[in-house]
Amino acid sequence: MADAGAERERRIGKNEALFRDVNERMQGLNETFASFTRKMEIVCECAEMSCVERISIPVDQYETLRADPTMFAVVPGHEVPDVEEVVERRDSYDVIRKFAGVPARIARETDPRT
Ligand SMILES: [Zn+2]
Image (cartoon, rainbow, N blue to C red; front, top):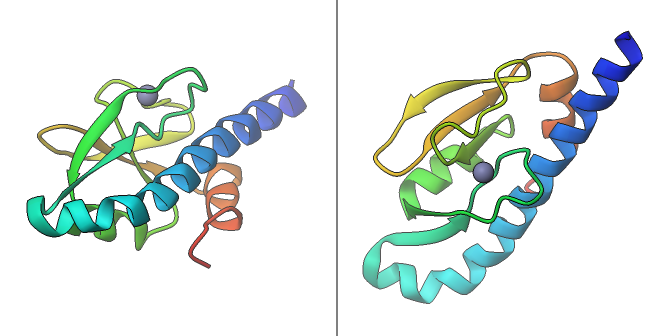
């Protein structure tokens, strides 16, 4: 059972890392637009592969979030309580932080900024 749990944690971690990659690429496309609005559109970074919900996030908040590889932005309620916790609630999204151990390690290993 322990193996199944670790496998699930890995899968959840990889899904979230994938959405973070997508958002990092979109940030480039968003930059011109963002310089006017100071906001950018990202996709929800939750573990659900089929989730394509959008989040409107101020650019400076996105940068703060990305400075910590274990933090992700999700639509409120999209967190997975056994691998991550909500550390901040914003107007349009929640900030989650991966728990120490496997979830945080995967988040660091897959960080596109390191
Ligand atoms: Zn989601």
